[in-house]
Length: 89
Image 1 (cartoon, rainbow, N blue to C red):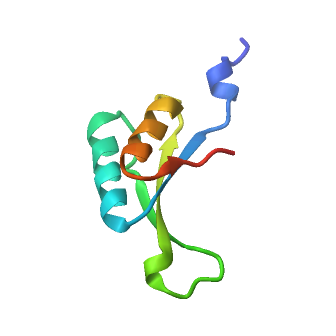
Image 2 (image 1 turned 45 degrees about the vertical axis):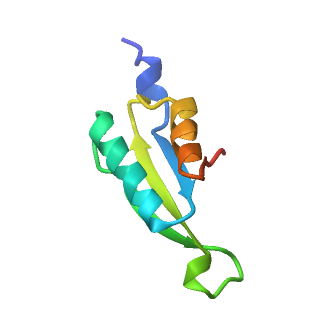
């Protein structure tokens, strides 16, 4: 039997870029509450290149989506509501 296309597809990872920790925490909580994900979204602090000031850090919400249940358009809209964006490859 031949494996299905879903089994052949690599796992999907979404990265939402937010301006501050509060926004990132709020987005992560909303995602965890509304989507059937295998693990909680992770928060990652991403200092901007060349910046030493902690205030110049962006926050990333990293979302593992192995079943591809998340709509990129919906994630982008959620990030935009929080003054962020969905990182594209």
